Structure formats: C-alpha cells, structure tokens
Image (tube, rainbow, N blue to C red; front, side, top):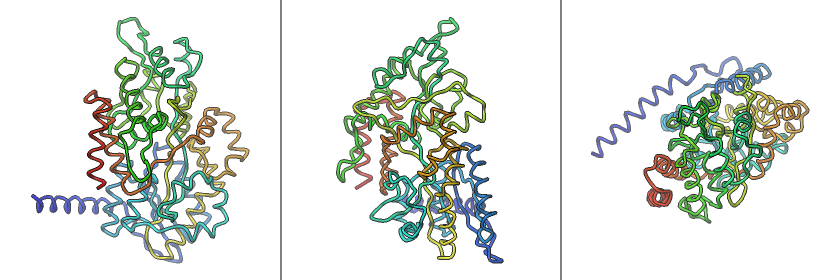
Length: 425
C-alpha cells in the first residue's frame, strides 16, 4: 500500500509539472531584458484586466524588465501547482497568494526574505502599518501587501424597503430578525421566493474566510498563546448563528464552493450576501446600482476578516530578484494602488492613495466603500504560520457539516479539534 501511494504521489506531481511547464514562459534574458514570470489567481475577470493594464504600463516604463503575468486559477488550483513547481524547480519569479501560505513557503525554503529591500526602500514608509502583521513571520518580512480588503454584507435596499425595513441590523439578534422579515412569498403561490441571506456552502477557504468574522465577533480566537483552539465558545456561537438562519428558512446555501458568486443576489432571490469591496468593480461593470453595504453585525464585539493577497519573491538569482523588487515597489506605489483601487474596489495599501483626490471622489460616489475603510480598524488577519492550512481544512469541514445539518456546532467543532490536534502534532 505504501509503494502504491508513493507511485500515485509521484504520478500526480509529474502531471502537475507538465501542467506547470505549459504555464512557464520559454523566453530567456536577452538583449539586456530581464524576463520575470508572475503567477496569480486574480478574480473576477474584469479585475484581471485592470491588473494586466498596470503590468503593461510597468513594462513600457521599464524597458529592461518584462513581466509576464499568468492566471493559474483560484487558490485551490494554484496551491498544488506552486508546490509542484517548488519541488520541480520550475517556480515563477513572483507569486500572488493570500499571506496565510507564508509559513508553508518558508518551511519549503521557496521564498526570499524582503527585509533588506524593505528597509532600503523610500516607499515603504507610506504603507499602512496595520498590514505588517500579515507580512512578518519568525522575525522576517516575507511578502508585500498587493491589496487589502475585508468582509461586509452587501444588501439590496429595494428589498429592504419592500419588506418595510428601515434600519440595518447592528447585532446578531437584529440580523436574524431582519433576515426573517426579508424571507417572503412575493408572488402568492405559497412558496418562499425571496430569502434574507445566502451563506457559502463548502469547506474551502472562502467559506472559512467569510465565517471567521462571526467567530471573532462572538468572542472567539484561533490562537490562545501557542495553542490552536478552534473549538471555543465563539466558534460554537458563530456556527449556531448560521445554523439558526438556515433552520428557520431565512437563509439558503450557495452552490458547493461557489459562495462568492452573486447570481442569487443580483436576481433578487436573496437580499444579503457576504462579500468584499472587490465586488464594486463587478457591479459597476454590470451597471447594478441597487446595493449598499453594512458592517458585520456584532456579537460580543465588532470584527471582520482582513483579506487581500500578497506578492512573494521566489528564490532565484540576485539579478532576477532585483528586477522582481522593482516590480514589487511599483505595486506598492501610490499610482498603482490608486488605479488598482479605482478599478477593482480593493482598499489601497498605500496611505497616500487613500487621500488622493481621485480616490476620495471615488469614495464619495460609492459611499459603500467608506464602510470597508471604517471597518478596517476591526479587521483581523488569519494566522500565517505553517499549520494554517490544517486549521482552515478542519474549520471548513466543521462548517460544512453544520450547514448540511449533519452535526451540531458542538459536535462538529469537537471532532475538528481532535483531527487538528493530531495533524499539528
């Protein structure tokens, strides 16, 4: 059985390396031009278009560097590719991913610490210091923040008005009451055709990311000192809240692992959906104006998940690393961050961008953006230690079990904690 498992593992790795070979450019550094590859999973497609235009601008302004940006899929598809690329020494120069992967990449000796470049750069003083926690691990800086965001609740004001709701919910009991009031049979056929809220079904990172604000809001913590405790009162309370919303019919579930899709929200089948400021660009492209945003209603305290991706410099020769840092400085620049924010809805990581007139005009035209800027003070980042993938996996399994009514919150979290303890030890 062990030999069979080994052969299967080798086969999978080889298949992945073949896939990676198709994603890796064949250009060599010629005529004084340094060719860099950048793998990313930017989504939705309009955001990828915004990024590509910014990459094109960098290439025009830096004739000695050519950056090729390659979309390699969403996080679940990116991860096996980058791990196989590291093993097969076919990795890109730059890699775009959530900072939660930092510890694992450090353990694999795949990324370069950025301390010396960060300390020598004049632009780093303009970066929001609240983001440093997502960059630091074991006394080194390992990434730069590409963009930042957090989770809120988008809602349809027209549906609130039709249901006679004048005030947005600010706590969990109000959220439940509001969702119930929004759940209605609007065509009189005896069947519910409008629901208060949609919750993300699945055990992937999206589900965990959008659920964590409720755990933190309920008073929970993932880390107590050096101990990881996903089975805690805040976790139980947050899962109970989601289960209550489903059991009283106020909420429906998304398609499996598709909790970020807006179809039901856009058609008015649901009035509230968990998502972030990157959604502004998508809604603008579809000319949707019937929406607003509320902060995550508080349990025992206000909280939300800090999102956004990071840019990692992979191990390579010094020549390529120097060119990679030039691109990283460009990403941190006021111009890039302003254009990225205006085009996608992400919050700028450069503080000068947040006060730039074009961005302030943007916020005045989209007041919902201010909700995310204000909520950033309550944002919490996910752990960036090597064991986060196991934490996320077990939390995702527990959430899915409860949402599918296969287990109680208490039982699901107890089982998840036992499995986590075994995997971390």
